[in-house]
Length: 205
Picture 1 (cartoon, one colour):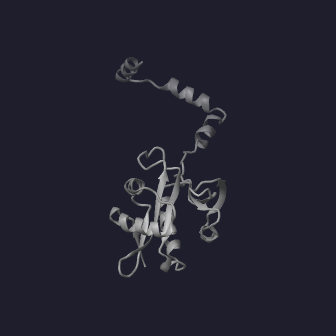
Picture 2 (cartoon, rainbow, N blue to C red; picture 1 turned 180 degrees about the vertical axis):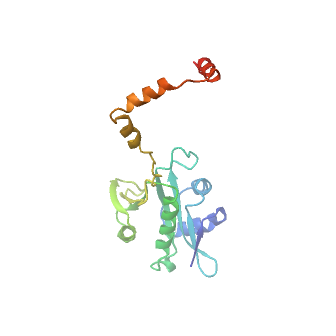
Picture 3 (cartoon, rainbow, N blue to C red; picture 1 turned 90 degrees about the vertical axis):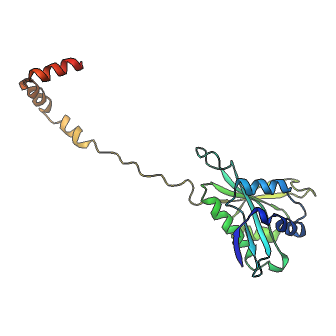
């Protein structure tokens, strides 16, 4: 089984698979928007003949065009695997690839919605580290509730480079040494600058 990035050219086959397995579908415009805006977070699965047998469509809340404000979290928008290839680890591999790609973008967590009655999908997501977050009543068109599940990014926030501060201990120690101030003042009094140095100091005042 080959897992690779989801490309625009895969849209027709992916939507055909989606229509076979999922009762509700996003518009082609939304699919295209996700792939063009976040081209590195969605993946497809191909069998040995190169036929598309699964996909995961993902996006990042907040976008990727504002480097000063990194994306807040990732979203698993849609996941589907051909019935013939289920229970073979295809969905797990797709989900893991997408999660890793979004984690690399610095998101805080990845979120998804699942039907309250889809126990099989909930079990899969739970095994992958997703935890129940909240319930959205009547989320789906048929009135079924949705469970929102979330998986945190273990590497968020990204580690910051250590701040190296120069120690001021020697300076403080010298300034507080008994007689140090008097020695400095005595040294200044003993200095006899040349005319050139005196003129330079005068000009700089």
